[in-house]
Structures are given as C-alpha cells and as structure tokens.
Length: 478
Ligand code: AMP
Ligand code: ZN
Image (cartoon, rainbow, N blue to C red; front, side):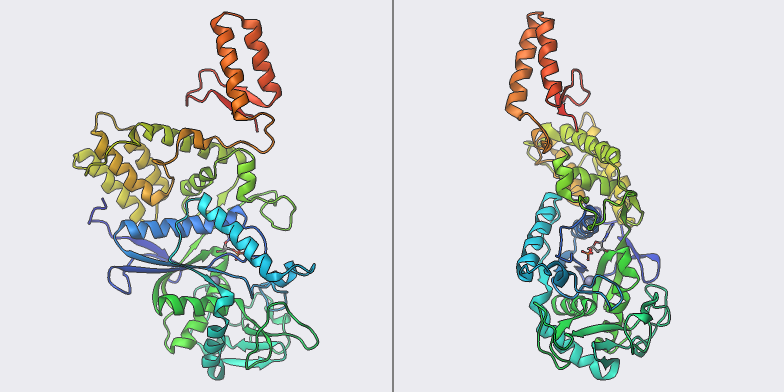
C-alpha cells in the first residue's frame, strides 16, 4: 500500500470537474486551507471543513506526496457581513471591554482542542493573520497603483482590472449580491476592501499604520499573502467551505492575479466541502447553546464519532446533522474498535496475501476517486471482518487504511470510547461496583435484590445492557 496504479483525481471547483492531481513541484503537495475566525468557538460545521482538509492531506501523504499544509488563523479582518459595511468580528466580540488579543488566543486554543479531539493532523504551519500585517501592506502596495482605488473608508480592489473576475463563483463584477449599497463610491458591486481605514475619531484595538491611514487589513488579503509567503505561487490546492467559493476565494484569486501579473489563480485546484446543516438553527453561533464539539462530548459521544459521521458522507454532499445519525456513527466506530482490538499488539507484517492486496487496491481506488470515504469505510470494514488471514498482515492493511481515515482504530481502547455525559449522576467506579453486586445477587438467585440494584442504576440514568451485541454491559441514558 498504496498501489501505484491509481491516479489521484479530485474535483476542482474552478473547472467544476474531477481532474488528475498533477503537482506543481514533483513529489510534493502544497495545500492551503482557510482557517477559523477566532471570535467564538468553532461549531461542528466549521470542523467539517477541517476534517475534509485533513482527509485530503492524509490521502496525499498516502499516495506518497510530501505534504506542506498551511491553515491560517483569522484574528483580524473578517467582518460580520460579507459586504464591506459590517464590523470586524473580533472587534465586535471585544466590544464589552475585553482584550481582543486574549479573545483571539482563547478561541484559537479552543479550536486547537477540537482539532486534536478529531485527530486532525497538525499542519506544517498555523499562520496567524496578525503576524503578517507588514507583508499584507507590502502586497497591497505592490498592486495598489494598477488595481486599487482609495475611498474614505479604505483601499478597494477594482475587480474589473483582472481578467475574468468571479470565474470560480461563475459570477461577474456586476453581480455583487447587493453589495453595491454597502459602501458609497465603489466602482463595481463586487469590489472589496483590502485595507480598512479606521474612521476619524475612532480607535480599534487592532490597528496598524499604512500608506492608506491607520487601519486594518481586509480578510481576503490575508489568505493571498500567507499562501504566497508560505507556499509560493502557484501552489497545488486551496480548500475551504462551499460558501467561500462565492466571495472570499474569487477575491483571493483576483488579488493573486494582480500580484503575480499573470492569469493563474494562485492555486491550481480549489476544493470546497459542502455544509453540515441542522434544521433547528443550533449551528448558529448567536443561538445560545450551539453545536460545538464539546456539546457532543457532554452528551456522551466520543469526538471521533463525529469524524466518522463526516466520513460517511461525501465531502461535496450536504450532510444533515441529527443525534440519531451521530449515535449510528458512534456504534459503527465502536464495532470497528472492537473488531481490531485483538490486532493492537500484533507485530505488523508486509501484506502479501492476495486477498489483502486486492482489498488495499480497491481502497486506493475509492479514495483516489475524489476522496470517496464512504466506500473506503466499507472496505476498511471488509478488512476488519476478514477471517483466516495472517494477523500481522491484516494489521498492516488496517493501519494503512486508518492512516487515511484518521479514526485512531489501533490506539483507541474500547474503554476510551465511553465518554461520560456531563449530566451523569454516577461515576464509572460506582456503576461497576453496583453491577458486580447485581451479578453476585443473580448468582445467588436473589432476583429481588438484582432488580433493586438495576432500578437503582436506572434512577441514576444508567441502563443495564444484558446480552448487548457489542458486549457493552451498561450505558448512560442521554
Ligand atoms: P469561519 O470560522 O466562519 O471563517 O469558517 C471556517 C470554515 O468553516 C470555512 O472554511 C467555512 O467555509 C466553513 N464552514 C462554515 N460553516 C460551515 C458548515 N455549516 N458546514 C461546513 N463548513 C462550514
Ligand atoms: Zn481564506
């Protein structure tokens, strides 16, 4: 593994086609993923974008490419509105007098906690936007004369100065999604601020001096600057959620064209994950209790159950979140962990058994087909279920498959999957002790006592699971 016969093919949003991956630098893959805006906790929809980018990165590694992955941290410039009239999300979060740098740090760390819990690999660089302001000013200066114009509110990019603006979104400079109203004096609806000058008489917690006055960089500028600085133009793949295909990425492309003086888009391929949707609005960060990973953990789900849920769907399909769906994904994860339990301490051996080789090749074909993780998962299950096969070889094949899917199957113990809901009234030791007493009572045929102990557990929200197919003897009722 991997077999040489599969060409990695990926859907490129620029051409709306599945294309062979041909690296800019032979043997390498350079990938940039738009990262979180750190004014609040990420919701699980945001985390779908990073599970996708991580699965892409793992796939590139699997096929032998030396991966350089960059994920940025947006701590300045992202407005509450996609037009240019909104407020900076971080400045708004800091409006109550909190220190903006503390807010950014706090939520960056919260995001990194989720990254670790979902087994998303560390990229080569976490690029923090505010570390690059000087380079952003330099970039803006180099394109200002030919591509920008100044308004009282800042420096704006004239989208008519580059060829074929909006080709990624399939829209032109005139379809600005009603953004023309937002800023008086804009030449075209789609023009956007690359530097936002602080209005006279106001101060921002984050602001810098520039040739266009004291102010802050625009959000689109940061990604162009950091991707060019860390990966060089052109690089291979730029990722983000599907919403970025409409405004943020067309604007990055326009800046990249202006900066490089040629019509390439900066990245050869642009890839977008579709949204995780939730009908009752719990995904909205403004809706009180919103769907963040910690909420899932508090309800007793292991975070990798959410990763499993993501992998079950194709990244380009919308995925509807539901608790039943999450529970089903969790059960599937448990089955896999139990299925490989006996292989954990086995010495891996090179797979030579033809059945394993063939299965490995089918797995490669599935992920090489624009990351078909849903099929790849079923092939992993086939490998786990294989009987009469040399254990060391089987272990190697499963480990190679899991290196792509990232479910940590061989290092997670069954007990690790039992996360305790926050609302649980009894701890694990107490539960196990009562279960032992109940076992003893049953052995003595004291069924009244056994039932009483069972009722005691139920009253504490614990269900006793006699004869459970997965071998679980209790669970906390969520
Ligand atoms: P933000 O922190 O808002 O900049 O978003 C971080 C990433 O999450 C971006 O790539 C977004 O496109 C992506 N994203 C936002 N909402 C969702 C969602 N519901 N499902 C999947 N991805 C999303
Ligand atoms: Zn970006």
